[in-house]
Image 1: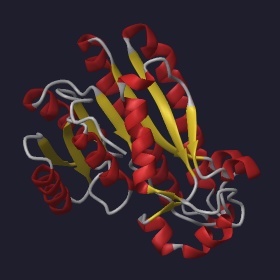
Image 2: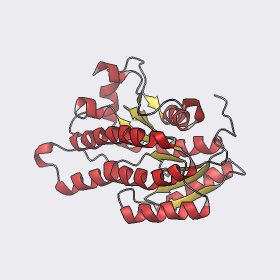
Image 3: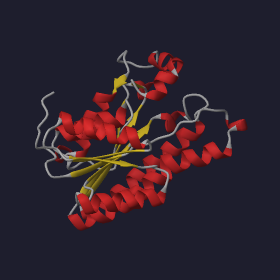
Image 4: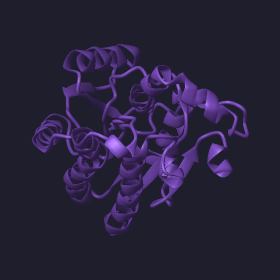
Length: 257
């Protein structure tokens, strides 16, 4: 697909968990290709720096800032948002991609894993939305895209209750932000996924991908690039009348559940 290199020109885009080998990096690269000034954040400091530098090399003239961020740490979120505001300006595109999926039965799920999943998957995105929506309101608008899953609709894909519960909350957060942000020109949507090939979780759990493929009408799982293209659409003016929606990018698997 031909990418308009000026689609996001001048806009500051912050993507969480963007220094891994999967979805977050694909999103950051797609926004950079569209001319956005991209903030790569991730919990791994060295990797964050290296990916930010790589994206900048691949897109000459594009400002790319790499900042370490634990998406479940509110003080760290405050620091990153303030640094971005001072160095690039207010965040106008936010992609909440960071997620933790600790698989285990509810009978003996560790409370520490529950607390951490809640912090990264739901409390962190809520706090980031709270922080950047104030800046977006003052700047005249913006777009938020939350990365979720259809796991909440099926109670998880087997021993993934905590993940499903937090993603269900994230879907509600999307609609709350859409309602409250709308009068200020702020849109918020969810991209809901099933299996995305090439991500760490799927590489570590190939049996889940194999099982769910049988429930996928299109006969193939989504790729990180296809999800990133959907994120770019929802972040762009092409979707200016779309807010509060959950867009499934799961090759039709959602319909089978």
